[in-house]
Amino acid sequence: MYELAKKALDLAEKAGAEEAEIYYVSNHSTSVNFKKDALENAKDHKLEGIGIRASLNGAVGFASTNAPKELENTVKSAIASAKVRESDPDWKGLPSNQKYPKVAGIYDKRIEGMELEECIGYALELIEGTKEYPGVLPTSGGFTRAKGKQLILNTNGIEVEEESTAISGFVDVITLEGETSTAYDYDISRKLELDFVNVGKKASELALKSRNGINVEAGKTEVILHPFAFADLMEAAFAPSLDADNVQKGRSGLIGKIGEELAASELSIYDDGLLEGGIETSISDDEGIPSQRTTVLEKGVLKNYLYDNYTAGKAGVKSTGNASRGSYTAPPAVGLRNFIIAYPQSDLLSETTSGVFVNTLIGAHTANSLSGDFSVEARNAFTIKDGALEKPIKSLMLSGNAFEILKNISGAGRDVRKVGGFITPSIRISDMNVIG
Image: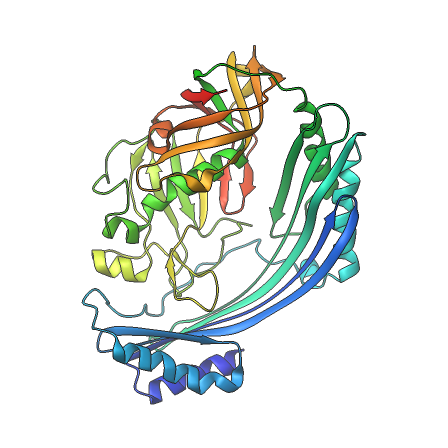
């Protein structure tokens, strides 16, 4: 890996690039999927490739390949792309070599060496868990293990190489008797530490509890959002406004609001690339900037936007280490790391006299990321009475504004979950619009 990446860097310099960056990834994943209670397929997927950025006269070109024999042509393509582009006055150059932190909990040798039979075994555990409750059938689900290596080199001395692993499992279920009800659960970790039987069991339990739903009247009430629901809503309706690129292009609802009180005074939010065992943890971001912990909100006050190297240079500030790439086939852009919701935790449900509890949402992706407005369908929702879940709700819509609900947070549970890169407990919102 290193030899090929170094060769590409040398070729770029010889071809006339003023600066060059090599982003090399090698990923291997194994997925076992099932439909109903039978295994459907097992897929082994390997991905290896290289992305090349080259700058010339203030313009940046990019090209990628997964064929080593095309390396020289790919370098030439990146430089040719830079030559035909106009100079960008906001381009300040690639980052330089820096001191990197130590991170923990992102690699597990047991996952690295996992064989197909073991992956199948964990998928079967998901199915087994659903059968803990009679009258429920899994409709789909699967187990995935992944291992990967990443290498970043550039002409300013950056050399970052890292290995990581992850496992995840999910299951959808449906009830077979009485009124049909469905439910979903999943879990993810960097280590081989998950209880997949319990994932299946919780999905079945929730589906059974959700049968025979009642109708509720429209109005405003307290709503508790399970970590799944709150993470989906924040990712779609709030987080995009923290992206410095969106701020600089006028596509954010948080422009000019640094230092303003935007949320409940007890709420803090952190973007943390150093979190032990975090799904988005690494020693650097995807262009070699050292990872860090960035305070986004502190006691309700907006403290920072999130920057990659380009947007930081444009703003005249230091990058927060938020460059992210979905693949080696794309240049970096601003992305979240581990997004941590911090609020004093308590026995949230038992402290709630009345309201609604929502497990998951459908349609969060349709939220307006500029205004923060949303209208979503609640799934597996329940009425709350005297500190306990009372009755399932047949159909429920939630509407509101993400920036406003942050001001109306009135509590957080102890049930902190990793929802991808989001780490959040259940959150209670006061005076939320519900439509039965």
